[in-house]
Amino acid sequence: MARKITRRLMIVHPECAGIDIGGSRHYVAVDPQRSEEPVRSFGSFTDELQAMGQWLHECGVKVVAMESTGVYWIPVYEVLERMGLEVQLVNPRATKQVSGRKSDVLDCQWLWQLMSYGLLRGAFRPAEAVCELRSYVRQRARLVREQATSVQHIQKALTQMNVQLANVLSDVTGKTGLKILRAIVAGERDGAKLAALRDGRVKADEQTIARSLVGTWRAEHVFALSQALARHDFYAQQIAQCETCILDTSAALSLDTHIAPEASARPARSAWDKRMRATLHATLGVDLTAIPTIGIETALTVASEVGADLSRFPSCAHFCSWLHLAPGTRISGGKPLPGRGPSSVNRLGQALRVAAATARTSHSFIGASHRARLARLDKPRAIKATAHQLARLIYALLTRGEAYVEKGIAHYEAVRRDKHLRALQRNARRLGFTLVEQPIQSVT
Image (cartoon, rainbow, N blue to C red; front, side, top):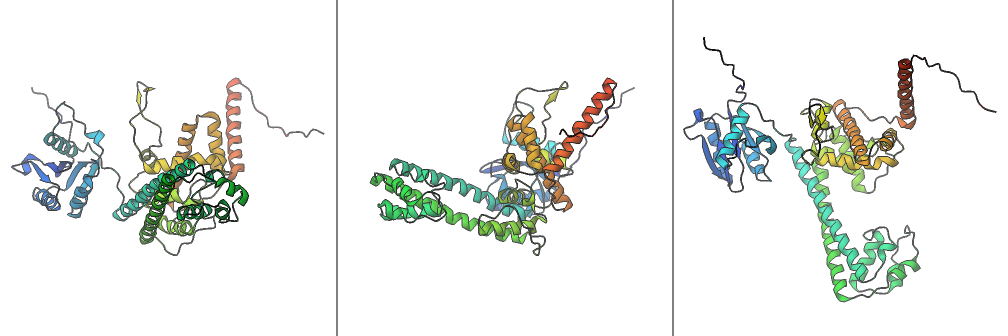
């Protein structure tokens, strides 16, 4: 009697397709029973992408799987999604070929086969409006980095001329520094006149600033200074334009435009920070800046990377795992595997790590927890653990819509004392003793 063979892999998505993304051509594979030519290639022009979507509709395809190859996948994703197809952006690590053969045709067929058996999961991609905000925020961050490079060029030109302005001013691109730099580029060389541009809040006196402004004034270095200053001003103008777009897009995402954030212990550094804090509160529904170490930049990263809707994450553990803040699972034989796992970058996870690094000086519950971790862990692990704590708080606030309540250092000390007391009681019971609480007698 023949033994009955049990089918191990079941078809989960019978109406799916796989696309191998390329720079100039895209290869698409569908079920051979749905088309006489199950593998086709399409160009990267918009009309060819629309023809791809039309062919997929004719084949009865509803779900499409593609790899996140550079930025080439973005127009394909947007065109197919606009045509009513469910597009799943999958991790390239999950689609590695089992055999040694590698070609565009085999890749798209392998994607289709894995997707049909339900072996691929789509990556998280926020709503379209949040994606627009994310593009503006990432563009602003890129401009800020490029502006920082121009500041380095300014400092280099000043050092070459032996103008020691950076030694008397904390920021050469501050209010006083920019006035002096523009006067130098305009042709002023008198140190006393340049020092007279000093703002009243600068700690150094005019005489010290005048001494630092005695330099060689070589023409090539002044020319380099003028160009670096022009780039700095140009980037500042573009950053301001990005900030305007960020405010407008965030206001369009606001859940309640009448929400006013509570008074913050950290004063706003600029008018944009003040407006952005109020807009983020209305966009997210909660004031994330009320959490210690979470500033405007971190809250803006939360709003632009995930938005206010975290329904795609079933639990807080899934959210922390997506942020790459959860403990690793490289375990075999009950023991952790040596070496580091695959490197991956998550912008929000990195922002939370940066925020956690500032918790060392915070006089709050989070600051006390971070200092306790630093006492028993190395610095990178303590920062990751504190970032994990911040991620759990953010998930709880966004999903429950509750305001953050600061517990304070006294609450942390009480919790730590209770935990230590329970540990002592366990050890005493293990040794056959009983702890008896007695009042402490004051020594006179």
